[in-house]
Length: 243
Length: 318
Image (cartoon, rainbow over all chains, first blue to last red; front, side, top):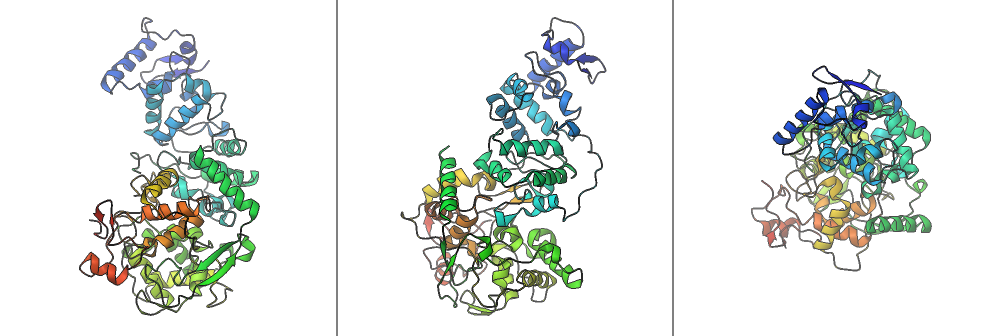
C-alpha cells in the first residue's frame, strides 16, 4: 500500500481506491477529492481532473500515476518508469490509447489505461504535458564524439539510419505529438522501448519508422544512445507546436 | 495497413534484387538549376547501392586540430544550424543547408558537398557565366534559403568552402562523381498528377511536414522539419522548385530513413503536389509573372506561371 499526501496535507492511500470505497457518501479527504473533481468537471468543459487522477487514480481500478511516475511526473529513472512531465499531450494520449488497445504491451500500464475513460485519458495527458517536473539529477553531458552522441546527432547514414534529433528535435526536445521528447528521459526506459520495437512488443509507430530505426541498432548502440539522451536537460514545455 | 505493405515490398525488392539504379547526372545537379546549365552533357553513371562504390568523405574525428580545422568546424556548424551561424543571410525560412543535403552534406544522392566541390568552376546558364564554387554557394542563400548572398570573401562563405574542400579530400576534380546531385527518376507510367500526389503527401509526408506544408518546430521553438511551401519555404528561384529535382531528392531520401520506399510514380506525383503551391517570389522577378516565367522558368517541370486549381502560381507569399 502506498500512502500519498494530498495538497491540503491529508493522507490517502491508493489501496482505498482499489477497494472501491472512494465514494461521495464517505466523509473525509476522499470526499473532498471527489467534490473537487466534480467542481473541476463543471468549470472545465466537463473534462476530468488530470491532477486528481494523477494523485488518486480513479474508482474503477486505475492506480495513482504518481506511484510510479513521481510527484511531478519526473519518473523513477533507475527503475525504468518514464518521465511524463512536459511530454506532448497528444503523444501521451496516444500512448494511453495504445496501452488500452493492446498496441503497446505492458503489464502495468494496460490495466491502468483500460480503467481510464476517454475524458480521463485526455485530462491526465494534458496535466502531465503542462508539468515541468523537477530538475533531473546533474549528470555530465557526454562529449560530442561519444558513440551515443554521434548516433543521436548524426545517425549512421551509410546504413540509412537518420540521426535521432532529425525527428525528435535538437537536444531531443521533442516535436509535436508524434516525436516525443527524449532529453532527460530514463535511460532504462529508452532502452526498453528500443528493444520492444525490435521484438515487436510495441507498435512500429507512424510510417513504421521506429521499428525500422530500432532494427538497425545493436544492443551497444541502444545503451549508448539511451545514456546520452538521459543525461540531457529536459526541455521546457511550451504550448503545442503547430504542425 | 496498405501503405505499410507497399513499403515493405519495395524495400524487399530493392534488397533482394540489389538493383543497380542507373542515374543520369544532369547538367546542374547540385540542386540549383531551375534552368539548365551549359555543361549539360547527360552522363549515364551506373551506381549501385553498395556504399563501397561511392566516395567516402573523411571522418570528423580526423579533423586537424588547428586553425584550418577550426574553420572547417565552423562551416559544418553553419551547414547544420544555418540560422544560428549565418543569420544575416537567411530569410524567413525554417530550412537549413542540411535540410536538402542530408548527413551534413556527406550523403550520396543528396547533393553531397564533396561531389559539388570538385564540379566548379562551371558555366551555368542560370546566370550565363562561369561560376566559382563560392558563387554557387551564394545562390543557395539567395534562393534555397530565401535570404541574401554573403559577399565573396565573407567568413560564412570561407567556412562553407573550407568544409566542402575538406569533405572532398582525395576526390578527383571535374569527374562527375557517382552520387552527385539527386538521382534522375525515370518518367512514371502515368502523367504526373496533383491529386494522387496529395494522397501520397497525406500518407507519407504530412506526419513531419504538416498538412499545411509549413514544417514543424521542436518543443524549444527551434526549426525541426522544413517548410515545403508557403512563406517559410525556399523561393521560386530554388532548384528544389523544379519538379524533376524534387522527385529525385524525394525518391532517394524521403521519408527520412525510408529512402527508396516510394515508387517512381509516387515521387513524381508528390513532387508535383509540393511544387504546385505558392512560395516566396523569385528574387529575379521581372515585373510580371509571365515575363519571369519566360525568362527563368520556361519548363514543364516548373509550375511558376501555371494555373493550378484556378490559382495562378508565382504571386509569391506576403
